[in-house]
Length: 97
Image 1: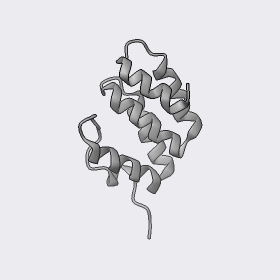
Image 2 (image 1 turned 45 degrees about the vertical axis):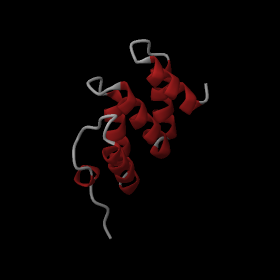
Image 3 (image 1 turned 180 degrees about the vertical axis):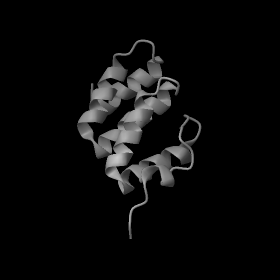
Image 4 (image 1 turned 45 degrees about the horizontal axis):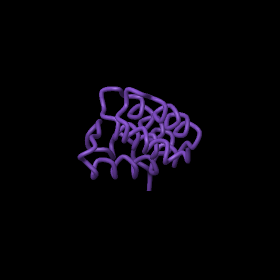
């Protein structure tokens, strides 16, 4: 069985805090195609048009396929004062700060 490209597995290109099914699909797709999945999760984590919850979630999911890249983003989010305090706290919790 050949792994489908990440973008073929994910139904929509963006995620929101309210769409947990989408988060699940993104996480599964990242494990199907690690390289493309890591790139897509990094893109989502870096996308300032998404809400903080979605960006922190993407960074946390990224740690599962590229620990260093995900952790760098989570540390940055934990220190990012424009992000909502709840999102900053979650980022810090994930990295153990």
